[in-house]
Image (cartoon, rainbow, N blue to C red; front, top):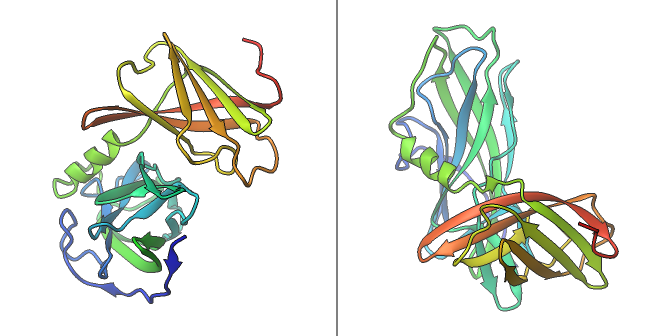
Length: 280
């Protein structure tokens, strides 16, 4: 288990690669963070895309929505003008982070956490809006350090806008790293201490190194499952999570397929049954 060390966070003005000049950003020895925008301006009545951009020092990481056996996911609390609303984080596919018997999911290197922003229809072109978010994270290597920062960004309101070239590559990489939602025939059932999952359908990856983990917490163990291929069907067997309390109605899984350095990810939402395998 990582040792957790308390550390006071502060916001300092600096320019992080890919962020507009003048953006309030955060930096310490383990992490840099900034609030960035995919577009040059906000348009009344349209949905924009913001992002919290995290740059980790070598060997350090933060966590996915399901952090795994240890850790905490990054949390965002927004302070916005009246009428503005944000959606949920569009979590990129994480890395599996294994240390001994501990299996976590998170981000190393650079990671952008995109968040949609709904701009009210009565926003006035020619004005400027101030956006602020309090980001809280746990950054870990051989020890864990909780941190937080108030990140802010000012954007103009215009009748039309375009992509911000300073952040275009960040948002494109985040889009590529999103798991693709698929409608495969799928089911999951619990029998004893094992959760059995069956996935079948067109597009099941072949000739790739597979891994799978749950976005839904406290249902399956975070260790890699046993995987068997049967043509266009994949059967997975997970150990039951130690904190399993009751059967959810549905289970969300992410399946990754690696071809060398190339990795694809698929997200599937499937019914869950506590008992015998459901009939096809």
